[in-house]
Image (cartoon, rainbow, N blue to C red):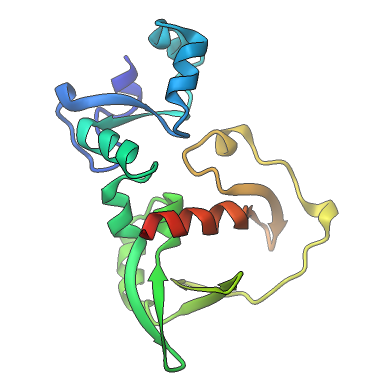
Amino acid sequence: MVLNTRGWKCNCCGETEPLFLELDHVNGDGGEHRRTVGTNLMVWIIKNKFPTTIQLLCSNCNKGRFINGGVCPHRKKEVLKGVVNVHGEIQICVSLKHLIGLEEHDKDKEKEQKLNDRMMVVNKDGDVWVFPVKEIHGIHHVHPDLFQNVPVTISKSKSTFTKEIFKWEDKHVALLDDELLFYSLKRSIQ
């Protein structure tokens, strides 16, 4: 039943052999959670309508996350794109898309190949990060009254980087938790 709701595949590498699939707590709090609910984890999952805080991973990815500080070795490779030359200095280039876990469509893959020449450079506490981007709309100040709470479907998902959302040009935009984001980036490339 749980496998049916999760697509019968590893959330990281796509492994589909049911004998290899295991339940994993997305936030890494499985031990604490099992102490709370006891041996009835499956009952808890069903009663709570298969929350997004539980995911399916294959044995390799699950163990890899445990050993690698919460980051599967597959993800680590995807986050680190390489190095780039920015005004004569070599900087690390990372993929926020892979860190945050954004899904991409076939059209996005085609566009990414054409638009890789756009980069955004961010300096956070002396660390310089370079991200490939599709669009840059500039720097905008958003009045705090425009921020809205994050919907539960987002706040409980595997991408926990969203602090608040706001509406801009008829779109909902996520305000990311910069402390958590850059902490996770550092851990993902070590």
